[in-house]
Image 1: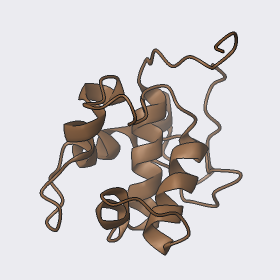
Image 2: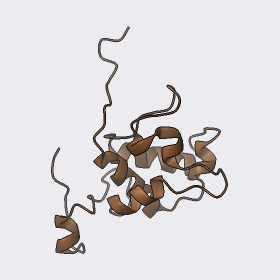
Image 3: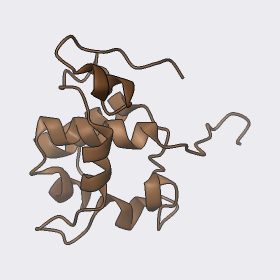
Image 4: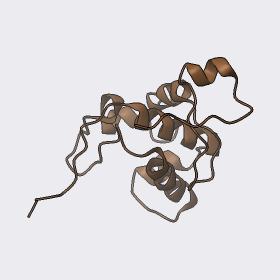
Length: 129
């Protein structure tokens, strides 16, 4: 993995501790905070009563259903674009649309930073028939 880029307004200590990721080049979000994302990933949503880890598993590695994606190790921008789509109504899912509806740009960025920082066991479909 390439080291995260640092914004000029980040403190040296936070950048060295790996607390922030680079500004998303494609999602246009503020820098994500891994620690804040970790807290948010296990915080129950007031409307749904669910947290990210309830369905996607601890650190995003163990979804409760095979049709739910593994999030650990996924590109932060991909997670951010997906959450923005659910929040803005451009992407629909029975639970995720409600789950993302109240997320701020910062929270979306934090979740992307957290899940992308986790060691995942994602695999592509190469060779699957």
